[in-house]
Image 1 (cartoon, helix red, strand yellow):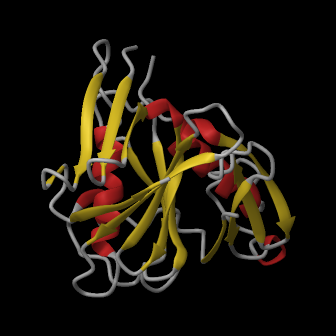
Image 2 (image 1 turned 30 degrees about the vertical axis):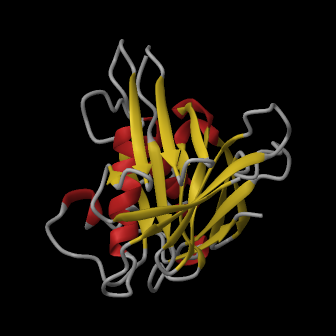
Length: 107
Length: 134
């Protein structure tokens, strides 16, 4: 099966690109705040952590669930070809879901 | 080869504090263990990348002693097994050409209605969740 690669961009100096199969998971980090983690690109026993901000209009976190669904769907790829997905690009202002507002940190 | 399936969990209340919700790839599931007569914990490869201490989702359900007529499990009175079985059905289903976002349990009480997976609350047997991510 073709691998799917995902990209998240904070700014000119902080970007991440990696295979979806290295995704370790995500969690809520507070109201409108999420942390995505991928296996560390340098092979160390740590994770690359990406902070993103999402819409939190009603204070219930429903938009966070919508973003989780969008990320899951984006990483699915295609059966044979795989794909390249830019989940969020704060530099260009483009996101796979309208409730993703920004990438705040890539570490 | 089937696509990855992503498992979503959310505790009661809103998604407004640390670990109120989490999502794990189904392939990172390590196993489940009964912790008491009312709880089962599902363990996943840790999100911190160390590969050591697992992350856990502790699910609370009816006491097996008071659940004499479960009816949904071949083990009859064992809601532990029912929760494990239903989790595995959700986690391992062939998801080709379907949505690969699976709500195992969402206790958020402010979900919209009629929006598919966004409205889904997951396993009916589960009454409480605790998510542990170091």
